[in-house]
Length: 120
Image 1 (cartoon, one colour):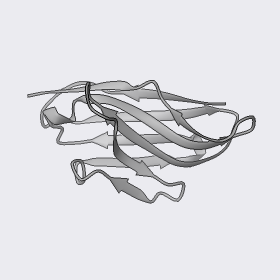
Image 2 (image 1 turned 30 degrees about the horizontal axis):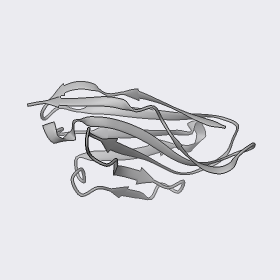
Image 3 (image 1 turned 60 degrees about the horizontal axis):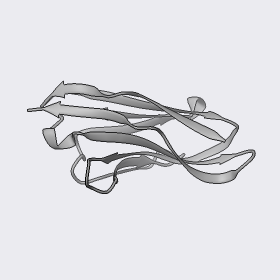
């Protein structure tokens, strides 16, 4: 079993910055890709950015050049640095990990979510 614990988020004015982090704990054999998704009420959850174990990254067009995803494989942690935030970035942000655990093998895991609110 793998647990994802997110931290960061909160309230910020437009143009400001926030950082999110997500640590994976548990009986981890290996973590493949990790990523951040976001969801607003009434809409589908959407990919913000993801990163492979080899640190190849992928971003949604709406956040490219403003957000940076990174990871520390030794700490099983993924980070999201969000700059030049806009009100439309307001959402619940979820951490995701494609991980292999001792008991369950390969599985997709989600964190509980953290609220990011950008005021205009």
